[in-house]
Amino acid sequence: MVASPSGCSVSEEGAMKLDIAGSETIPTSVNALWVALNDPAVLTRCIPGCKSMTETSPDAYKVEMQLRVAAVGGTFEGAVSLSDKDEPRSCNIQVSGSGSIGHGSGTARFDIEPDGDGAKLIYKGSGEIGGLVAGVGQRILSSVSKHLIGRFFVALRKEFETANKAAG
Image (cartoon, rainbow, N blue to C red; front, side, top):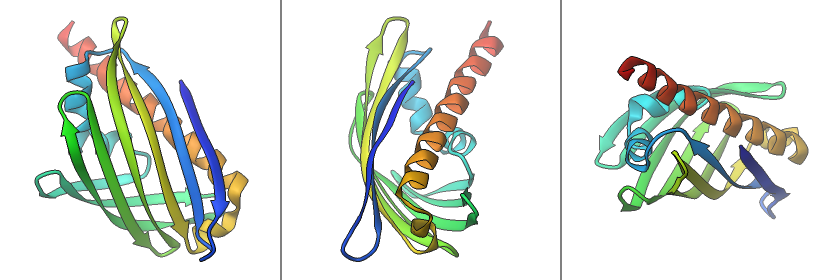
């Protein structure tokens, strides 16, 4: 796995800016990975802290999450929208949310390409986080984001291992 929160910085408004980028090869086809990344049930199981993801309109979702960052934890409600979809290769994602311990928004892009017997998911994104959660510090947020990305990919890989066992 290659996951690199490439940096955190503080904006003039006091929000924490966070950039992420990386790639991960998943043992499945490009098409199967695309389907999984567009399935709210799969994403609910794979996104750390995600309690629900409900479609509100085509390519738009309401999300409820429970997260803990260092000693700060709470619930968040937010929105996720997908755009510029080039099935089964790429998609842009916009996210926003707020909760008892802060707020955030961001954009990301993912690309999927064949990689041997699997599919490589390449991602890059940036966002801003404000409120109590931003107060935990740049190094902690960078470390936590890397950890959450890692947990997402472990869960996503398990989705395909389970599907492969059921099919085999």
